[in-house]
Image 1 (cartoon, helix red, strand yellow):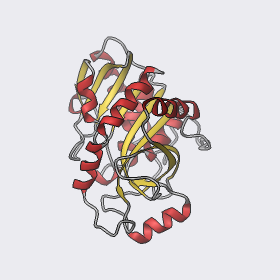
Image 2 (cartoon, helix red, strand yellow):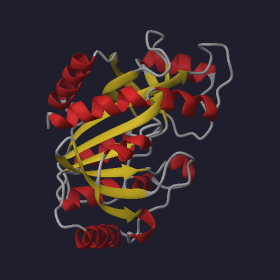
Image 3 (cartoon, rainbow, N blue to C red):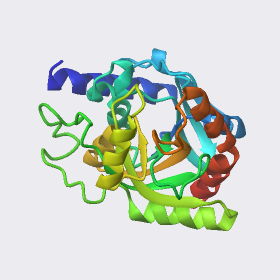
Image 4 (cartoon, rainbow, N blue to C red):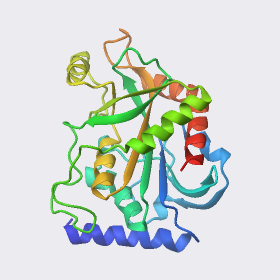
Length: 275
């Protein structure tokens, strides 16, 4: 696909979404594993299946329903994405971050992402939360590869502050008010879908990683390139490979994601009340 075709697809998807809603939010929340129940606590104003949006990918992962909502969350009109797209599903990073470009085209200024991650830092326990301060994306195919989308940002964007400090401070303040433990740390990306080996986890720990996962980084790069403010929160769903001595499973990930759901939802509701 050429640069012009990709941009045309972005315009077509944004045009369709705009035709389905009365008001366009300027914030988008991406729900990772375990946060789906949040949508039961909001009143959707509009509900758009991904499959009806031109050129949108389809989600294939258990726990990732493919639905775009417009709803009020703590009084703030918000896009809520139930489900995201991953490189390991077979999508390119351009496809996996397509929704980010569409949101930018619609005028979204703030992207809030949540994800499930394995804990590398042994100070973080399964089902606890970590706000991402920075990432290690050395294994991530850049979504900016190929002709630059000049409509969104520069060829060589700075990555010093991908994750917005002021948003992080609001989240930390919210966690303190609710007495919810909230760690801060560096998120390391791997392509998946296989979990990492103990040797890979030792390497990532040496590099400074506190948690590891298979999403978020490409999206954060595309969002920052588009001029968005980015906030990302990981639910630590398991100890990473080699730390506990136990084999890893998706069932454990979902179990601990669901266990943290109450705190995750309360934290997002309080945070959105401060936006």
